[in-house]
Structure formats: C-alpha cells, structure tokens
Image 1 (cartoon, one colour):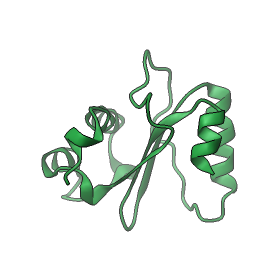
Image 2: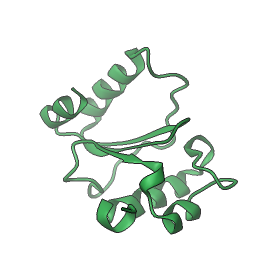
Image 3: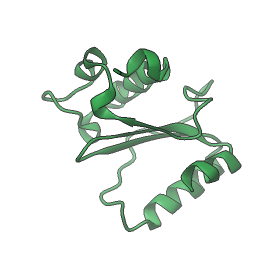
Image 4: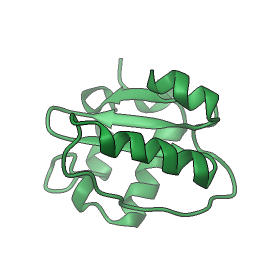
Length: 116
C-alpha cells in the first residue's frame, strides 16, 4: 500500500532496513511528505521515529523509485563501511552530512551500490 500511496502522491525514496533499524528517505512536496509521515506516525508498528534531516533539494535522488526497499546486508561493503558508526548501520546517530552522503551513494543505482 505504501508504494501505491507514494505513486498517487508523487513521492519517491528509499527504505533501508536491517534487523534493528529502518531508515527512510522521502522526496516530494511538503504536503505529500507530511501526509505520509502522519501515516507512519499513526502506524503502531513504528516506534521511536526520528527526523534526521528535512529540507528542500534541487533534484530528487530516487526519482525512479516510488519506495525501494534495500536490505542493509545487500549493500556493498565499501559503501556501508564508509557510512557505518562503530562498524554498524546506525542511522539515528549518523550526522546529517553522513546521511546525505549515504543517500547519494545509494542513489547511484542499486546495481552499483548493492551486492548480489
């Protein structure tokens, strides 16, 4: 349903997940992102949701992805290690700059960034 909602609302982005963490980047109009974020906050499956960064961009990084799910374990080691904290994927304690660089690396394309 998220992909359908995102396509309807012209949202793009990526959802990166491992056993303990989910990291989501949303791209679109402020109104569409606010509505999507409200749905996330109303979903009882989500706990301790934090906004790491919010702002306007000149172009979308994930313009072809309504919402692509990327398993952390499928990301190439060199990309993940460059953006890990204490050897682990810990988005909640990554700096805003590190989050932006991580998203840029992922946006190159899953075939270039992800293993397998």
